[in-house]
Image (tube, one colour):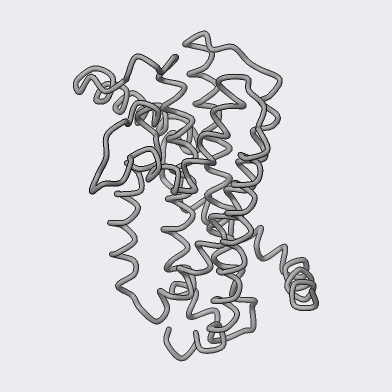
Length: 269
């Protein structure tokens, strides 16, 4: 508890730095862009259109059990993109901050945290795209939409834990950046973004496909978000437990690995 309290005090002390880092990344991303922040809405819309064309029309993989496929697709796409962006950008956050870390003392976990916060800001802007798709397709709005905050918030902490772990490991093993890019591509197809896992009745290597998908934490966050936003179904106890437990375990592992290795970062960056 004492260590967590010290980390919180340090975070509160450097809250303005965290804000400025997020603001800097936001400005850099849209610098010299004509549309600017509008791309946060257009990009998921255009990607949704591409995925819808490929998986619903050309490859005929929509499946008869999925109602309102564009909204179904958009919900999965937005949450997975947040996880992908937050973890992928966090990996090199310590290395890119080397000039600053070698000059002044700054809590090192600020940098992976900043990348996750920036990814969340982009995700929130992208929800405008989801809203537009729901209005265009005539999707009903349910009161359970407020419960969508739970899978979203727990996904943030799950992503932060993974980001802390990856950021620490990348300082010592730069190959992790290349390995992670391959892993995240494979994870995309095991997160039930383009299909209903109930339709995956086949087996791979003796393992039932539905059971394999259920081992993926991202699947639970996406499913919980879809239940509350699309289907108007409240989160059940199992969904709450799995999303919360994955976030707690991820944060615990990420913090332990990061704290035990951070004193050696400067020697390797």
